[in-house]
Amino acid sequence: MIAHIRGILIRKSPTRVIVDTAGVGYELLISVNCADRLPGKGQEVRLDTYLHVREDIMQLYGFADEAEKEMFLLLISISGIGPKLALTILSGRGATEIRNLVSRGDVAALTTIPGIGRKTAERIVVELRDKFSSLSEMEDTAGLSTPQAEAVKALVALGYSRQIAEKALKKAISDFDADPDSVQNLIKTALKILSGR
Image (tube, rainbow, N blue to C red; front, side, top):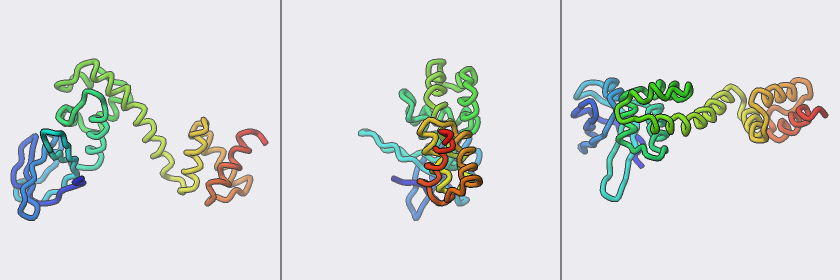
């Protein structure tokens, strides 16, 4: 898998670029939003990449940053959306805007993107909304130490909300002197608190 390419930008259009790396010219398909963020021809450029392989074609796709690439990968995981349509979606709206539209369930706004009908827009909202919720919960534990974050995830997996799990963990550490570096001890103490024992 080619994770990224760094080299000199030889050709640039709104939908494709050629990057020269060590004398080899790599053609990458890109979104219009990505093209807008690239430097001029002759400048050094770095693009995150995705290599799409089918029995009849190998095509390299380029992205301005990791967020755009992650959104592309999420989009192509949806039935009926291939790499070219995913690029069209990213060209019509940036990765952050797509995430916001999906979170709000704004099907009408998604249908304004060329090639996206109502059924496809609804499928995007349904399939990506849960994934975004999971990602948000993971991001929300970023301020915790690793053992505490692991303990929160374990409690959430047991059916507790993240907010209740964090509250129980804080109480476990402050009131019950639970070892903040022991995932097992944190979970055990938090479960005692949550069960009222």
